[in-house]
Length: 281
Image (cartoon, rainbow, N blue to C red; front, side, top):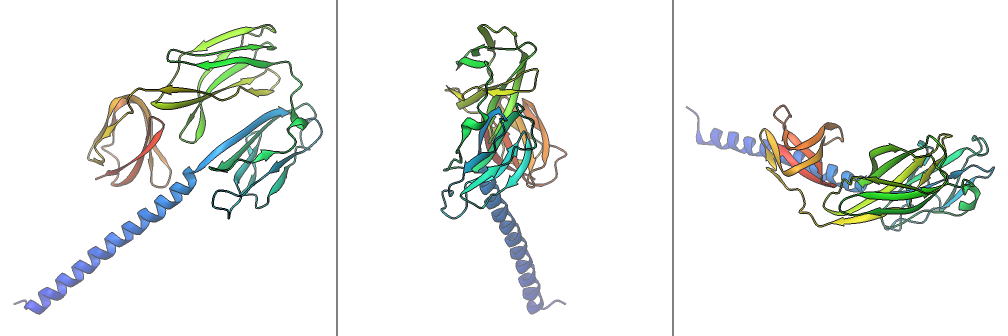
């Protein structure tokens, strides 16, 4: 026969195991959320031009915390060349490029500060191409150009979840005189940020100024947050599901997301240009 003392000891051990398990999960969530917050507080600064024999110098102020520097990653023509430069100014070496070659600089930086290229004139393009007008409204994205060369392409990009995403591609008309273009929009709720990228047949790249459109459509909602087999969206939308390690699980467009085969745990839903958390039971 089991004594009351033995029952109490067993209950105490069970309680300690349960507390320890919950504490481990809570610590994991806290560490992950802190790291995710730090990762999400990044944005981009970009500049394009042509190499003319001189390197580019960047002013790198302190970030908002007044401890770390602003720039996190530096890319040259989509190749990572510098990570977290720990100095107030740094050089981007272009000497491995041919004179006249395209230069595309991207600096990923923390929010609340912006790196500054000190000598932008050294890569200023001598091309005659230019964007004349760029505009977004409820029905379309429209723009006009001049100075095009034959066989160029336009890429319409939208800023989604802290990154520029290509949403449409069309061929240029190739006329040196004025050209008019229009594409259907892909607005999400709230503020929409767009830019156009033009790539000439010789590889030179040009970006339009960033332009905005505010959509007053209701934000996309979803349920449940404790998921058994699926998530239902309030309307058909593009979505992406990512696990707690940043690995993409699924993406698509629709009103329902089938998650029956998903393992139990914490996940993130990217929809309507925002991030939401849910738990799979």
